Length: 246
Image (cartoon, rainbow, N blue to C red; front, side):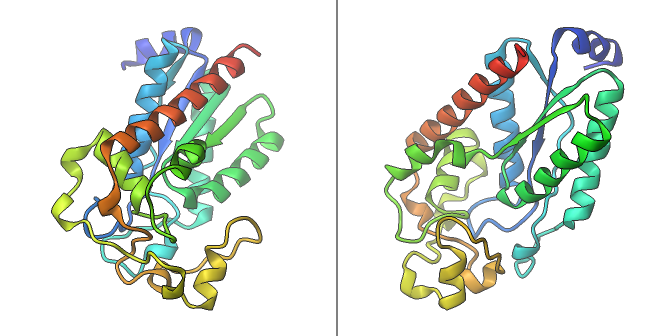
């Protein structure tokens, strides 16, 4: 997109989508940029389905990942730095005339910081409407019917399935290795941190899994991945259509 096209897009496409990811370990078989790859793919599918209502803005390639720093290659931003970057992006876009901005984050660790950005913008930029969404959580009903371990999550069945669907060339299938799959493999603090629902208790991933994986990614299939991505895209599109109309 050129600057001339961007000026036109302000008039034609009222919503800007910002893909946000992370640069962190995803076990032996998935790339460090897995979360950004997924966010970008979903953003493109959403924008295509909206037929011009939305444009894709610059990515946020590094996220909030202190819980993965024990594993090589992980790069993390503080919540303060990540939130500041998002606010700077939003401020620039708003100055050019976009007032509806949606962050699609492939990394759950970004969610808390995105929430604070949204609250701050209500005070500093009340004319801006700032929304954010994860990906896998939107397809929880699909994930519920997948074959998976007693313990599952990061770099496990659902995340690997999505990568097999959207970027199979980046998955080292011969290196996919189970991580923590049973509750008895967790210590008391780890088990408490993975309990569903609040209160929330963050812990480092080297406490949860020797290889950084929760679940058994060998069970993942591209078919399940497509089902997850399709459900997430459909629900985001439904939201944006309604949002753009108000």
